[in-house]
Length: 354
Ligand code: FAD
View 1 (cartoon, protein in one colour):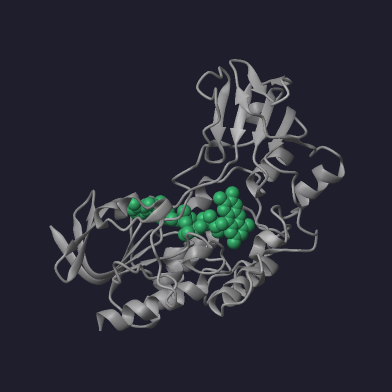
View 2: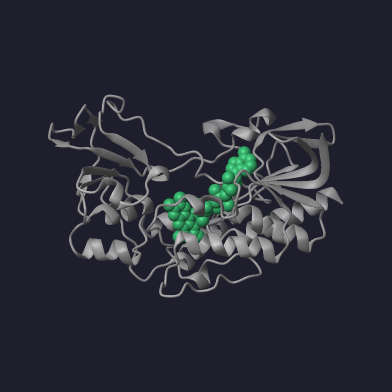
């Protein structure tokens, strides 16, 4: 059975909901298809102590400010999931779940969205599937030889799971720093980073990051010198637990090791550290396999985006990509940043389908 609507949004996390908010305001007929059985997107799967790098007031989707979390300046992931649940309900967004999209195909003047529970036909598609579902692991020699536990950010739960063990945390970004801080008290920790950790100033939060990403996009669009964006400020937001561990001298980073062996990790000069577990906080890639039938991937696996309408695919103008990072809108992979590109994408598809 195939259903028809004007627009299908794939993914019901924050990006998909922000798109839904604007589509509803524009009077477009649409459906959001989400693989999860409950609202909340990736936030449902985060580790126990994860806290936002911004206060609630700077972590809001369009229309509805995120309420503060009692007793916490930086809300936790459960608070975000509850906010998204409320957001979806409040605006009556038509989210169908669990519906896993397996492919998007051209079908005459429609795009056919293939799912495990029947197909949809739409005049336009907004893909908002996030990155959490495609963890990235670097190709470090000896990884398959290591006999201890290996997990990625997505599989990390709490320090209890690794208590008392010799743990190597890999990665100098926010996940690496937060998980290293989490593990600093109850494990024998080694924190390995490719370059010395770059902490942002303690008073910088998500709003400053949003401003930096926006200023960079503006400069590039106007042909001015690249301002460097968020990366120019540093790599790690000094949220309170990170600050505490850093200030207590517990977050000393080692350089990146060059290989693993059966029992641990080995550096270029031959020194080694025995390890029971390695936690790879090495990032994510966009979850785009459902778009493979459209054949859009160009150089380095990227889908070319329209320079003016930053969320629109050049080769398939009926497709918009939302929330995957700065290449789909400045700070679009953040709560505060996704609103604007969501509005632009919704307006563009509304113009297309009318
Ligand atoms: P997701 O939350 O991943 O939602 C995508 C949805 O699409 C999911 O429900 C998924 O199941 C569904 N989906 C995926 N594939 C399919 C498919 N084929 N068919 C149907 N459905 C599908 N941002 C901030 O603003 N502040 C922070 O403090 C912050 N901290 C972060 C910390 C970490 C560790 C990470 C990884 C990210 C953080 N971010 C933060 C960035 C960002 O806000 C989150 O990654 C957010 O979850 C992205 O939302 P999204 O809607 O793009 O993707």
